Image 1 (cartoon, rainbow, N blue to C red):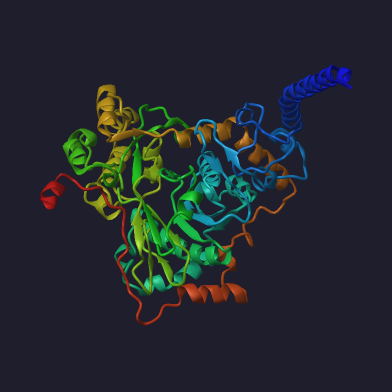
Image 2 (image 1 turned 180 degrees about the vertical axis):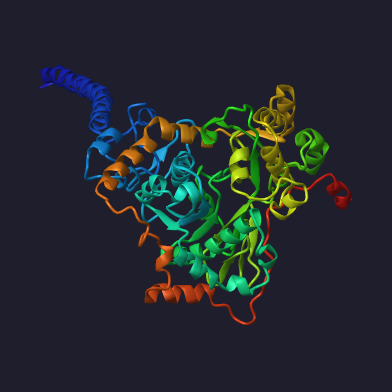
Length: 511
C-alpha cells in the first residue's frame, strides 16, 4: 500500500501538465481561429472594413443600394436602372470623420423633403440632389423651368428615386392662379414686379403646392433650398440632417439655419460644390465685437457684409395650416410658429462662385441697366451692381470687377479673417461631392437613365408632374382643403424677403 503513493503522485502531476498544455493550446488556437473566421467573413462580404469600404474600387456610399457588384455592374444590368443606385442601404461610416455613422433605411424617421424652383442643368442639380440624399433627405420636389425643364435634363431627373419633377405648364399656372395667396396681404408687396420679385412670388406659390405634396407623401419636415445651397448639419451627433432634425424637441415648429456665404479663391471655378472650402460665417454665429470689429475688412468695399442675403433658410414641421412666408421662412395660419435658430448648423450659399454667374443672371432679367430701373428688379444692392456691370462692361472689365469684388485673392487678409473666425474652412460637403463623383455615381445615374429613356418615344411632359394631379382625386382634394382652407381668425405675417446682414449702423442700434 505504501509503495503505491509515489505512482499516484506522478500520475496526478502528469494529468496537471497535460491539462496545462491543452489549455495553452486552446488559448493559442482560439484567437487564430477567430481571426481566420473574421478574414473569411470579410473576404465573402459579411464584414466590411471602414477603410476598404471607401477604397477606389469599392463604390458603396450612404444613400446607395447595397449590391454585390460595382456600380459598373449595376449599369450593365439592364433590369436595375437608377433605382439600384439609391434604393436600399445600410449603416456606413466616413473614415475621414471618426465615429460619425449613418443609418439609412426606408422606415427611418424623420422623413425629410426639399423643394426648389430651378432652371439649373445636371452639372449643378445632380451633386445637389445626391449630397442631400447622403444627408438623409428622401424626397425632392423640383419645380423646373428653362434648362432644367428641357428633355435632356428633366427626363434624367425623373428617373432618380425620390425626385418629383413639376413643370411650369399652363395647368400649373391656372392652379396657382386660384391660390389664396393672391387674396391675402402677406405677399402682396411683391406682386406684379419683374425679375427677383417675380421669382420670389413664384417660389412662394411652389412652396405652397409642395406642402400639399409633402403631406400626401407622409413627410415630417420640409425645407426650401435653391440649387446653389447645401445644408451643413454641424453640431449634430452625426453629420446628418436626419439626425439633426430627429433631435429637435417635439414642440418646435420651425428650425432656422443661418447661412454662410462662399468665399471663392480663384476666378476659374467650374464645380463649386467640389472646389470651394472657404466660407464667411453668419452674424448669428459670431461674437458681436468680432463681427463689427472686422466688418470693413470682411466687406472689401461691397455694399454689405454678405454679397446677397444673410437671413438664412428654414425647415418646417409638416402640420395643419402650414404656409410659406416667402422663400426664407414658413408660417402657420392659426398660430405663430415656435422656432429655434441653430447655433452651429448652417446653409452654405455658393454665391456667384463662377465667373459665368454674372452673365447667366443678367440673361434671366430684362430690366434696363440703370441705377433706377434695377431697384424695381432686384432686392439686394450687390445683385443690382452685378447686373449693371454684366450688362454694360466688356468681358475684360467684368473679369476685373469679379476678381476685385468676389474673389478672395489676398492671402494675408484671408489668413487674418480665418484666425478671427470671420472666415472658416468647411471640407465635409466638398469631400462628399468629390467622392460621389470619383466613385461614378453621377455618370452611373446618367447611364442608367439613358437605358430607361431609350424605350421612351414620347418626350412630352404631359401627365408626369405631381402638381398637375393635386385636386384630381378624393385624397388629394381632402389634403388640399386641410392645408389650404383658412379659417376667418387666421393670422397674416408679412413675407420675409432676402435680407442683408446688419451693417455698421447696427453698432449704434445695439448701443
